[in-house]
Image (cartoon, rainbow over all chains, first blue to last red; front, side, top):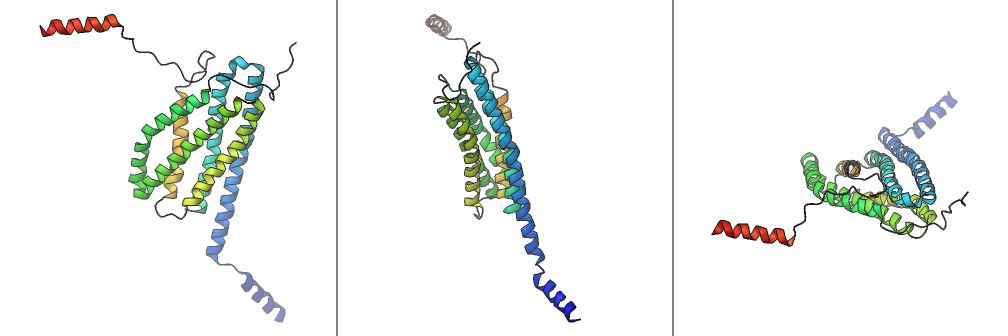
Amino acid sequence: MEALAKIVAKATEVAVDPAAAKNEAAAASAGYAYGLAAIGPGIGIGYLVGKAVEAMARQPEAAGMVRTTMFLGIAFTEALALIGFVVFILLKFA
Amino acid sequence: MSAPANPLTTRLEGPAPEAQVTRHMLRRGVFAVPVLVAIAGFVWGSDGALGCLYGTALVFVNFALAAGLISLTARISLALMMGAVLFGYLLRLGIIFLAVILVRDAAWVSLPALGFTIITTHLGLLFWELRHVSATLAYPGLKPQPNPPRKTISDIRMRKRTSKGRES
């Protein structure tokens, strides 16, 4: 009985406030949302720019067109990270 | 067979199409701002309108910084441009993060409106710009605009004569 009382006392000690638990979960989710959303665009931009540089080095006469396409591609890829960032803002601060 | 091109030593000179595209987008964005502010103000009130203005400014700075980094480093080396784009991506995300952190507790900014504006302005301007971007070697940046017929001196004289004839 004594041991059981000790376990119950310990469990009561570590029991967390539901509001605090919710906040912690929201913070963790926000971190995951931002982090995961930034990985994909990071890989995408790296691949996109690498290929564009390769194309420009091979065909400098097409550099203008490749740069335009590359810039728009970067901006579109980055939009994915921005969406993740906005989700982070809303989960964490709003 | 020619030697493979070296991105470390290859650099691009001439006009910078990304700067031209960005200027065009910013000009369009300035016209879109009042509409966005009105929508945000209607939905979230005055905090929303201010948050919308703040978000639009962030997106404009983001685009301008991206284009500036590319056009500046492309004149030096292609490899440097690649590095600048990759680290510039982190830098720009960091700037947006800092900008949001600065105003997160401010009473005059509505965060949902800020988020809405960042996404809408960014994607909206890009999709709008896609209609005006040229995909040919002849015009690397924007599609050429149809020029209005130029007025020659003889046209102007002819117009003056006809207007005088009508008056008399």
